[in-house]
Amino acid sequence: MNPQHGLNYDYSPWTFWSSASEAERQAQDAHHKRLVKRAGAKIGERAFLSPLANVDPDTLSIGADSFIAAYAYITGAITLGDDCTVNAFSVVRGNVTMGDGVRIGAHTSILGFNHSMDASEPVFKQPLTSKGITIGDDVWIGSNVVVLDGVTVGSHAVLAAGAVVTKDVPEWSIVGGNPARRIRDRREATIPATAVEAPSDDALMAELAAFANAARADASALLGRSWTSEAGGAYRDQPGAEPTVRAHCDAIEIADLLLGSVPPQLSRDEHMARLRKLQDPVTGLVPEFGSDVYGDSTITFGAGPATYHVLSVGYALDLIGSRFEHPIHAIADMDPAAVRSSLDTLPWRNEAWGSGAWVDAWGTAAYWNLAQSHPNATGSLEALFGWLLTRVSSASGTWVTPTDDNRLEVVNGYYRLTRGTFAQFGVPIPHVERLVDTVLEHAADPRYFSPGRQNACNVLDVVHPLWLAFQHTTHRREDARNWARTQLSQALERWVPGEGMAFSAEPSTGDRNVPTLQGTEMWLAIIWYLADLLGCAAALGYRPRGVHRPEPALSLPTL
View 1 (cartoon, one colour):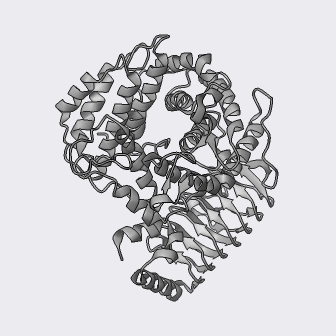
View 2 (cartoon, helix red, strand yellow; view 1 turned 135 degrees about the horizontal axis):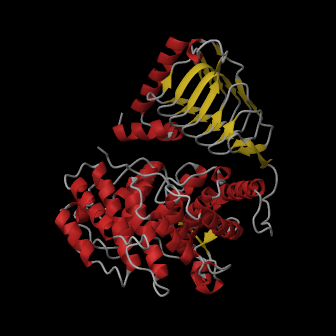
View 3 (cartoon, helix red, strand yellow; view 1 turned 60 degrees about the vertical axis):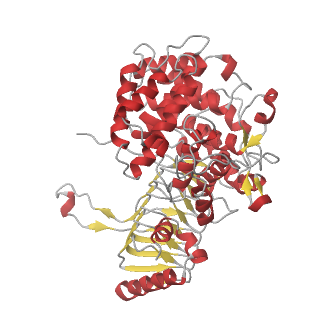
């Protein structure tokens, strides 16, 4: 079995029967036979059970076209119908019966048993009990959901990501939260935007769920409208535009977020091959389509679209289970002294955003190089953090002193810098309360944040630093939440059916005011961050995993 193919199938098992080799199919058939012999399992046609999953049931019946992905943990008396998917790292234990078409997100626990809790004995000495869990047909269970023993989930229900389900869920219900509560009926039409300035949590949860439901329903259409079949097929930011590398990456991010799959115009392997072959082996950078720089040194880190492609292509490959073929040599060969020298020469005062973008791309390139164990990666990264931590302003929390004239560039540059460094590597940001004050002062500027004046960059570059700060402080949290409520209410109104979202809300900005892949990808992430500041992101049922992921991509080691 090709190791790369095997890894892809273990994490994306629905691709197996359409693209596996004969040897891979024979290996899967042999795995089925072992489970039948050992556990008496009943396995339907075209089912796939990852060898990396711990499948050790008392009884198991799994229907046709159903899948169990890598590192799932399956024990007890388990029945899955046809077209069910148990995604990676999920747990299904005890007495659990599912109908057809059940989708279970990653890191979910469905626990059809419990401990007795008699006060006269320690819990570990008491017997287990089991009422069992029953799940109907056509149920979507999001990532990180917990379903406890004794629960019945009706057909066509949706359990939002992160929900803790302790009571029965009626048919067609969308539930979310801890403990889970009903948000709305899945059959209800999209809820119109409310005129209430600060909606209740229930109303906001319902509005978020409706937005996400509409976005998922339109995902295939908006990806299709940006695909052109010319020259072998490619993605454009919008119909009529030229194909770009970023458009391809944005399509992958959108499909992952809303569909849990790759864009349907190409297979996973085709997406992977197209992106990997774009990398220049000399510099490790990815130029724009049509560039004639491969194999020489004319492509430069810090100039042109190749710099952002370190982020967009790297994370697109990561989402589809791959990575760059070559190290990012353009930064891998920089020793700590060269890193410090480069930082010293950046135009911080005149171009705060450009300087922050350089650091973002450098930090991300270092992350990809760490994955390939490049010898310079760790020492140079330590030099980067050392320079940043000794140059940040204790008065503003930023790397350039903000004024009325430059505050937009300073805050936007702060987002780019911290995204690729502190956020990406799980390092706490410095002077966090002063940073909150600086960002909120900028967020009050009507030139950028009054109704109809927002664009995706400006809103993202405020909400992400605030979200990052509130992992470490409660300073002015309510002020930030009030701003987030206002921005979220307006953002939810901007979805264009079948087309997505425009980068800019301002009509006078021309092409930036029409729906694009870039605008859609960015606003989907922004809406998640705004909702999470308000404690309501679970209602969306999605969580960014690519460029805008909230979790660190890699936590640096500590002593």
